[in-house]
Structures are given as structure tokens and as C-alpha cells.
Image 1 (cartoon, rainbow, N blue to C red):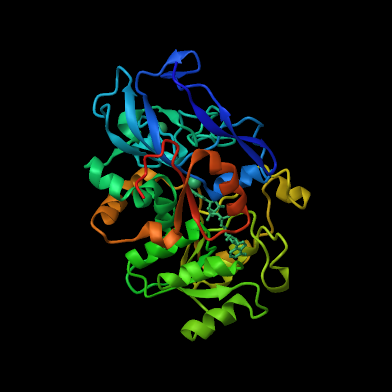
Image 2: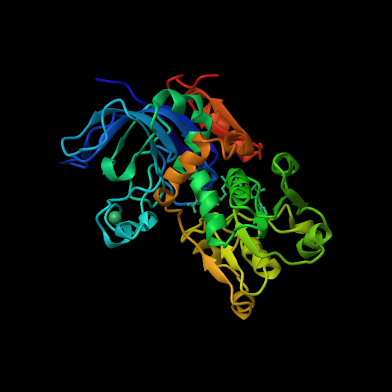
Length: 396
Ligand SMILES: NC(=O)c1ccc[n+]([C@@H]2O[C@H](COP(=O)([O-])OP(=O)(O)OC[C@H]3O[C@@H](n4cnc5c(N)ncnc54)[C@H](O)[C@@H]3O)[C@@H](O)[C@H]2O)c1
Ligand SMILES: [Zn+2]
Ligand SMILES: [Zn+2]
């Protein structure tokens, strides 16, 4: 029997590398003939994982984490027709059946058949269907023909694996935030958050032709990272209000579009920058975006937050100034990114050198046993995207 090890959530602040079951081509006690088993080549730590590890969700102890998976197919089920053993593939973090009405129109983030509790599923995530996560050596991927993106050339892909590993989540997610905010040639954009998603979004805004990309955060190293590839920055610890800081850059206190790459653990601005204020980003992007503009909201908001400061927020109810957004006819785009809508195009953007996404988000490769340290460093605000290399396959 093959061995497997994975990163498990133990309790708030603690993850552990444990011996876990080697995956089977099965869903519960039913065979999963449409699935494959992957030997994982790279698997990334995400800000979304941090919500669970900080104890801000109802994630159960023992949950094997990891939804950003790239791997080699080592076994394919009987009904897998087009993916073959030996293929190097990117796995969208959304698990999707390819058969329901949402999948059929490309809404793979809210597939109706992969999670009995609600639409949408992911590997290794609370409330997302109970699928085993992929911060591990091996993982099972269902509906393989539909879900997987095969890289055209393995050697070429391994040479760019630091970039391609970001196709499973944050590159498409950041890009989706920009697209849904209406970013295009000449746009002036505000991106809230300079974590990996915010940085991927900012790089995507450049790819889409934005004229000015202004990134806001309160962590100086992350803002420096945004500056390193041509973004303007606003430091939200300053007393100068966001709109005034924007006016100092572009002459007016208003942008064409904005993207929330922060989510419900947002902190306040100015003297409140050390305090959690979950509605801050949503209210800020409504106030600085022009009337008629669109707001991309990939930042995550939850239906249950045991760690919230008040009872309303514990149920995901926040003090959003919806009247302002309504008065300005804003469009709001929320939800999980449907990765499959974008991953092939973004793969080509990487392979043909149209974007340096690993450099933009500052990828650092670590071994599986260093994952707990990676979680700690990321939680402290390291300006890095940690990529776990469980089999030592990633070239230097
Ligand atoms: N929709 C999706 O499909 C999807 C996919 C991946 C991640 N996400 C979500 O995107 C968000 C960002 O992910 P990440 O990995 O970059 O996380 P992260 O925690 O590393 O980054 C969040 C950043 O926001 C900053 N921040 C806090 N309050 C702020 C404020 N008021 N204004 C501006 N910045 C502020 C923090 O300092 C931090 O740098 C998370 O909520 C994550 O769950 C969503
Ligand atoms: Zn993720
Ligand atoms: Zn479906």
C-alpha cells in the first residue's frame, strides 16, 4: 500500500503534517470511475486556508487542507476518456460535475451535484462537500475529463511550474475580480488587499490594459511587492482617508472600478488599521468607485464566523452601506471564482511570457514538512505565496 501524508487542521493556529489514507477511486462506498489519482507536484497555501486555521470558520479538527493542486496523473478510472496516465495537469479548486445547469453555463463555482449541503465544492475546505484536500502527496480528483487542464508539454511546464501552479486558484481568481469589475484598456482601478490574491489581481489588471492600478493594504512589505511590478500604492495605516490618497495619485478621489481582495477579516483604516472591521472594504470600494462602476468581490465572506466580534457578524451579516452602492448604480460580483472559465487562456499567457505571475506574487517553494512554518509566516503577513513541493520535483 502506498504512503500518503497531508497537512491537517488541528485547532486554531495549529496545522500538522500527518500520515493520511492513500486516495481511492471512490466517493464514500461508491466507485468513482470518472476520477483520477494524482501524484502532487505543487500545492499552494491560500489566504482562504488561513480563515480556517485562524479559527474563523466551523472547520472540523482533522480536515486535510489544500485546494490549489497541480499534479501528475498516476491512475485513471474506467470512465476517464481523455486524460491519460502521465499527464501533468492543473486542478481548478472548484469541484464541478460538468453535468448540472450551472456547470453547463460555466458557473463551476456553484456546481449543484458535488456538495449535498450547498452549491459549490472544493478540496479540503469547510462546508465545501467534505472532499479530501491536496496539501498532500496524493489526491483523488473526480470528473477528471471535465475538471483537469492538461499542460501541452511537460518539460516546458516544469520549467514554468512556479507560475503554472497559480492557475488552480489565485491567478484566475485575481483575474476574475478584475474582469467582473470591468477592468479594460485605460481603466483606473483600486485593488483592496496586497495578499497573493490582490497581487494576482493587480497583475491581471495590467494584463487587461489598465492605465493605473492602485493597491491598498496596511502591510508595508506587501505594498512594496505591489510597487515592484508597477502598481501605485496606498498605505491604509495613514490618517489620510483612502479617497484623498487616491486623489494624490490621480488628481481625483474616484476610480473607474474596484476589487475587494480582502474579505470578511478586513481591518479598518487609519487609527483602526489594527482592528477588525469586516465591512470596511465593501464600504470603501463603494465610496471610491464612480457612479455606474462595477465592484469585483473575490474576497471571501462567510455564513458562519465563530470568531466574529458581534452576533450579526457571527452569521455573516455586516453593516454594509448598500444605499450608497444603490445610489451609484454599482454592480456587485461575489462568489467563488469559476476557475475553468479562465485557466486555459491564463496558461497560455504564462507559456507565451505575457505575464510574470510568480514574480508578482513572490512565490516561495517549500517542502511538505515546512508547511506548518509556511502557515505561520503567511499569517504574520509575509509578502510571499508559499508553494509546497511534496515530492521534491520542482527544479531550482
Ligand atoms: N473568490 C474566490 O474564489 C477566492 C479564491 C481565493 C481566495 N479568496 C479570498 O480572497 C481573499 C484574499 O486572499 P489572500 O490569499 O490574498 O489573503 P491574505 O489574507 O494573504 O490577504 C489579505 C490582505 O488584505 C489586507 N487587508 C486587511 N484589511 C484591509 C483593508 N481594509 N483594506 C485593504 N487591505 C486590507 C491584509 O493586510 C492582507 O494583506 C481572502 O478572503 C480569500 O479567502 C477568494
Ligand atoms: Zn486558494
Ligand atoms: Zn455541476
